[in-house]
Amino acid sequence: MGKDRNISNERLKKMNDVLLNMCLHFCGAQYTESILRGRGFKDNELEAVGFEIDEEWAYMERCMEV
Image 1 (cartoon, rainbow, N blue to C red):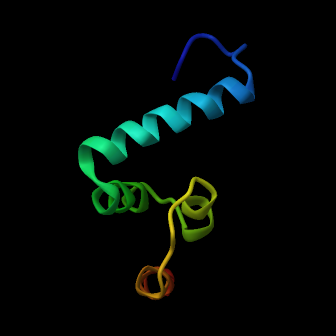
Image 2: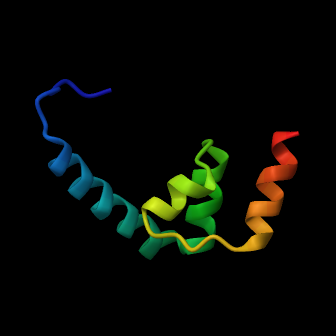
């Protein structure tokens, strides 16, 4: 993806926070969450960046795994 592989994990996390907040601001939480899920991110990963996971999404995710 990028050329500079020397960026620290701390800087990557900060960049991730900024980009996620931009997405949330411009697209809304529900749309951002659906896009992330469409890219394969699971409940535990979404919770790790601050999404609150409700039972409906968890149920849908379990159904998709079958």
